[in-house]
Length: 220
Image 1 (tube, rainbow, N blue to C red):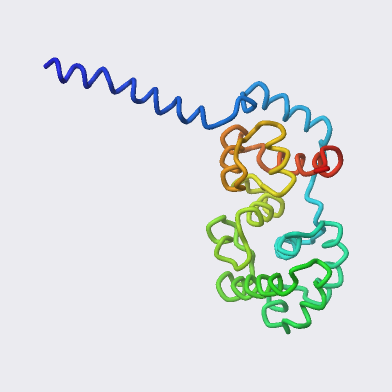
Image 2 (cartoon, rainbow, N blue to C red):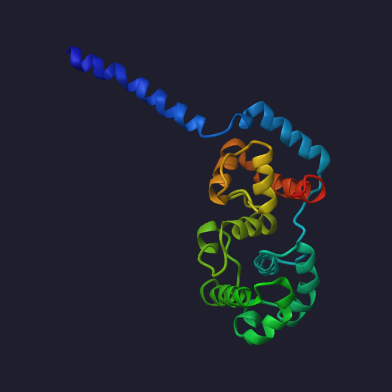
């Protein structure tokens, strides 16, 4: 009887200990009032922040985001008008000449790998998704060259679906400077941000932090 009572008394303590460990995983800077103040400041400074990649539809945004890896959005925006004129849809990209695409995107860097990703993703969209960009994280991640960052950009900007937080180099750097995470791995950073920021702010927060990183809080 006494043993059973002791066991019953220990369970709440164990539960409290587990909860304490979870909350301790986030840095002190992630305290709710402080996060609220940061969001308020971003709203005031960047009320109209949007994705800088120029596009006319979800597919163009997907291709532009793939091109933006290790490249500036300015450079991508210089390349995509001619690229999309020559290859207007997924079918055009899927069955194009790799060498021709490489010539078009060479200035964005890593053009061979990007060409493989663009053609692979386009072919999958044509053959598995009837030519339409999928609208779920799970489906987007099956496309060659698409990881969570790219999927979050497409879902949030093209479809208004908040499935996560875009973690690019700016968000990664500023999240650490603002003491919102103690991690360096993008997936862990995203997990932290999703814990402390309400889902209705995931999309706008990403845009605002990226704008702040480019205009004010630069790497140097």
